[in-house]
Image (cartoon, rainbow, N blue to C red; front, side):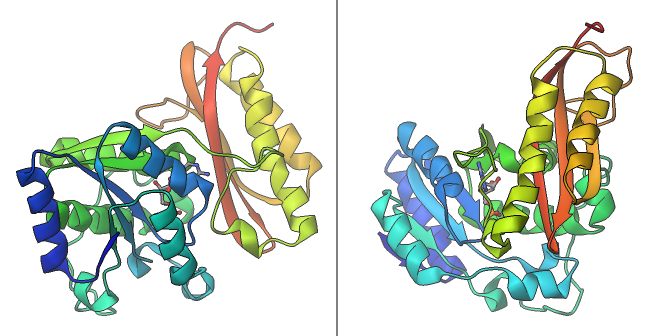
Length: 284
Ligand code: AMP
């Protein structure tokens, strides 16, 4: 496994991969790797891509300085794990290379309006501009590639897809289903900050999604089922919504067919999210 820190070598390595007739499979992460991240690597390898996994804790997508300071950084373990699953190039750019002016706010910013302003964007102003800006830079340095994103961050994939379409970026975005622990909790680098009790509380999120996915009913019925599930646990609910799977706009009871359920909550100061596909139908 090649380990690359500077943007020039990363760009050259991707270019050399394409010159050999291979596809670059880009897997952007913030590290603290777990099976959720590895599922993206497996998906890229299954397609025969040469896998470039990036690790960069992007300060511009954290609104809360304490959250950024507490974000887990486990580079040595990440490197061993990346190697064990067949990552070809591990890209670990420095903050200085990615954002030379940081913390000065003189950057070009990519803001995907609409999609980036609802749900997570509402609770975390500026978050998706930080995400879109860093992902645009990862794409710019990598060049034409397939890029793998987890549905765990459903809104993030929607924002990235829209950006790719709007800017005609030479990137094929592939999404990968949510990877969960045996008890249903969606894997997240932040789960390690939960106590045993907090983890039990956090399970209400995946139970809420499951309660909406279990049956076909109007949006308000599924929303109420999710909220009832969340109310049983003592967690601070940020939102529990049934939305259009493409526009992420809330749906009313006239809507039928495929939709998406998304929830977010705060447990022991840790913000957690989950989502899943649901079907809207007649009242049972
Ligand atoms: P992060 O390091 O949290 O920024 O995540 C990097 C990538 O891994 C993103 O595309 C995430 O959506 C994806 N990812 C994180 N957790 C999971 C999971 N439990 N299942 C699927 N993908 C995930």
